[in-house]
Length: 208
Image (cartoon, rainbow, N blue to C red; front, side, top):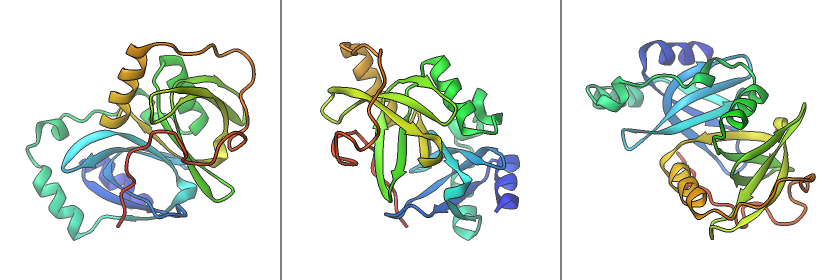
């Protein structure tokens, strides 16, 4: 696995990452950073860059770098957006809490998918605080309504999706709309006020 990740990082070549997500989930992209704990990829959708995905290695089952990826690399050759890919400032951070802290400091709003008691949930919005084992995120839902803060444990994070087209456009809408509630006081534990995936906006999960 690590060899394929390093080759992708050096050559800007495609890999497919398969995971142990309970509903099945995999990612196509180019590796921008890799540490003992996590992988950071430039997600590629329809042969175009589409945001950054951070995946803890605990969830990764396999990294494929075969004939399908070789063909994709040939198609991507000469595409300016791919040729000019540069790692984000957090690509060399080795731990998830450091990346979360960076996003919090820079006011970058991610989509965070967690798996809690075997059930996936997606939360999108600004990170409001970072602690030793968890962080809080002020979530909005798919109807463009602010909900409340949720405390999310680092060990339950399946992925971070950062500045994809979907997340960027929805975040821009929510920032322009305003009405963000105050962030004082502790947030509820995840799952305490709603069922997973009941209302948080989420981009379609690719399969296969």
